[in-house]
Amino acid sequence: MNYLTEIKLFNEWLETEQLPSNAIVLWYALMFTANRCGWRDEFAVSFSVLQSRTKLDRSTVWRMRKVLSERGIISVEERGGNRSALYRLHSFERLFASQRTTLTATVHRLNRDSSEKEKTSKKEKGSSTSEERKSCAKKREMPRLNRAQFLSTLDPVWREPMTVWLEYKRIRRESYRSESGARKCLSLLRNLSGGKPTVAAAIIDRSIANNWAGLFPLPPVQPVRGQHPGQIIHPATDERARQLLEKLDRK
Image (cartoon, rainbow, N blue to C red; front, side):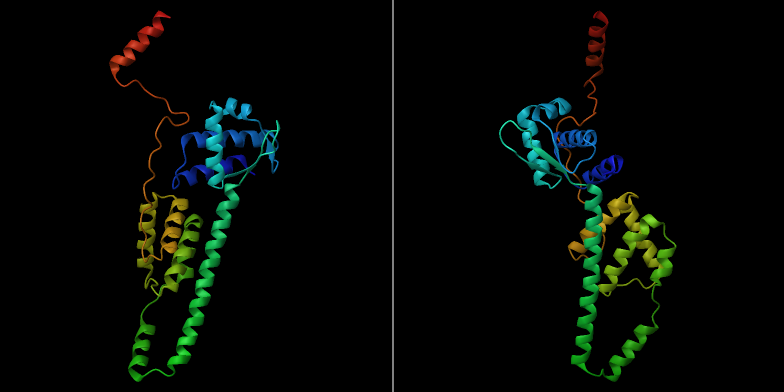
């Protein structure tokens, strides 16, 4: 498990997911503990140590531990008696890789099912009428986007999400007819994601999961009440700030 990679992916995950601030503090404490233990698959740590590293009381640590466990971020095994519980951290790097693999497999399965249905439909319908053949001929004459050529011109970080989206649109028989249309789609995706490829991938995943034809911004994350870790609370007014400074000078 790579310490910096896990922290980076955890913060990217928080951009689209909600988690109490105290649960975030506990996750960082568990990551620090796992690092101290040499990244073993399982490690034991007492409540008193977690209280010391999070500055939270015992009941809060217990509740936040339950939140992390229910969200699938950690696993906890109680051992009874005076023995400390065993903890297992679930790697965000593996989670993101697993989600990407699952999405790719789903796209391939949809592609295969679509091809099989199309073949069955052609067999049942038999030969087309002359008007249908003329219509098909006109469709074949319409320009089509060269996906491989278009994708080769993109930066690697944007190539993967656009590959998934173009394949999804092809399965829906809504392929872009020109490179201009595909580039406008990419421009829209960049605007909706704020230029972040990971957020863009989440936007695409959401559209595919809901069988949407277009791309839409992710719902805003509700702010967590209370002070965030590392946040400095400033005095409400200049007068209050002056009073605090005078109090410090007298000391």
